[in-house]
Every structure is written in structure tokens, then in C-alpha cells.
Image (cartoon, rainbow, N blue to C red):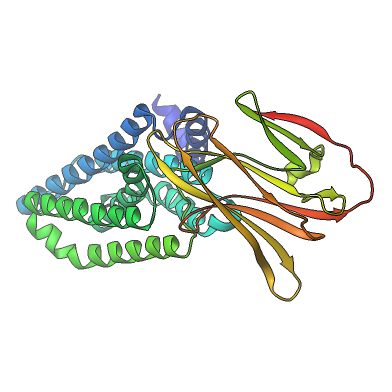
Length: 358
């Protein structure tokens, strides 16, 4: 065994990266609904474990400093903290990615991915109080932004401000707890911890108010553009053009319309049980001088609990030829999903097919 460990030692960073990627892929398939009790228990468990390991290391380091010795189990406890925080970042990245239109939320997702990578590759910093406490603050805030809407049953600016307040209160109590375990060590670093927390707090709030923060716990289940939609046996009957396989690789599709023909936008948005909110279909066309111009907005209420998402559709009468997109937004302007397409005028009936949306 020792010989095997010695052979693998030079490849420690590569193996760590492979383990991180493997864990991320596994979590992506293992995690189900964000409001499932098991999922919430995992999140809460990791957060509590991370907090407990930080507190234990802080207490042990403070005692060792008083005795003039070194904390013997520093490496092991630091690894436990790294594991708990890494598991949280992996889960956050999965659910925030599911809940976002990447073209809009990529700055936040990039920051989240950066934190995940830094947690893996700067392992020596997990023995430092400032580094782990600030990471814990970010994890706590990321958790509050989606657990509060699940608990209160709605989501809007006021709900986000409640998440702000809950994060500050819980983090302040955590710092008081750490201070009780080792006052001098906390107060020696309180300035750096405060600055780190304030910067993280400000960045996340900026992401929210600039509509970059993904609208978790909502998630896009299905979206499409059709020539006609009607209700049918508890579902929806949609008539539209066959979807080219190239669309899966990022190509924008073209919709062929006869003069005067309307278009239908369909969306299915997943929301947790008991959550009630409104979503908006924002129809926009591209103008060469003005950029994207909103042609119409239509809002309708959704209720959570359905695995395949709450369904609805809106209609745009006689859209003009050119580039179009429909954003599926929250009422506070965050983008849940987006579908882009070109409108082309034709004088004949295009090839159509029927889909049943359940």
C-alpha cells in the first residue's frame, strides 16, 4: 500500500482533479428535485459539517497556540472542511446551472466554478481561518437564496432581502460561536473576515439586482415555438415545424410563417411544492440600430409541485420577419430560459408535425 501511495504522490493534483470531475458528474445524476427532503437534508448536512469542522479546527488551533504547540490533526480536519465545502460547491453549481440561461448567468456560474476549483487546488489554505470562514459565508448565502423561497412559498425582491438578512444573522452567530471557542484568534482576523464577507455579499447582491443571479429554485423543464397550441386531454397539443438536429448544437432555427399567421411560445417551468409566483414571456425582435426591442410581455401565475414543470403558452400576432427571441423571466427580471429563432415569410404551408406536451 505504501508503495502504491508513493507512486501516486507525483500525480496528486491530477487525481484530485479527476475525483472532482467524477464527483460532479455523479452528483449531477444523483440529485433530483431541489425541494425533495433528501436533497435539502444533504445541503443542510454538508453546511453543518463544514461549520462544525471549521469550529473544531479553530478551537484546536487556539488551544495549541496557548500551549505553544502545533495542532496534530490539522491536515485531516482541513481535508474534512475541504470535502464538505467542495460537495456544497458541486451541488450549488449543478442546481444553479439547471436554473439559469447560461448566456445571461455565465458571470455568476463562472465565479461559482472558480470557487469550486480554488477549493480543490488551494487545499493548504483550508487551515487558515479567514479563507475557510469567508468560503463558509459564500456557501451560507448561496444556500439561503434558494431555501428561503422554498420555505416562504414565493420569490421576489422581498424574498431575496429576507435571504440577505438570514445570511447576516446566521453568520454573525457563527462568528460569535467561534469567538467563544477562541476569542484572540478570531479578533486577530476579524477585519479580514469582515472585508471578505462584505465583498462577497456585495457581489452576490449586484448579480441579483443586475439579473445575473440564476432564479433558483425555478428551473426550465421545456420550451418551444409552435404554429399552434391547444389544450388536449389534460395536456397540450402543439403543431410546429420539425426541429433540425443542428439546433442541439447551437444553431438558431427558422420558423416559416404565412402572412398574418401568429406564433405560440410554450414553456414548462419547474417550481418546488407550495411555491407560487408569476413568470413572464418576453417577446423581443432584433433591430439593427436599437438591438433587442421588446415587442410584448405576457405574465401568468405558476404553482409548484409538478415534476415536468408548470405549463403555459403565449401568442404573438403577426410577428415581422427577422431575428426573434422569447425570454422566460421571473417577475423581478431574472431569465429562467430563452429560445431564439428567425421568422421568414412564405406563401405556402411549411412541413408541420404534431407534438403532445404533457
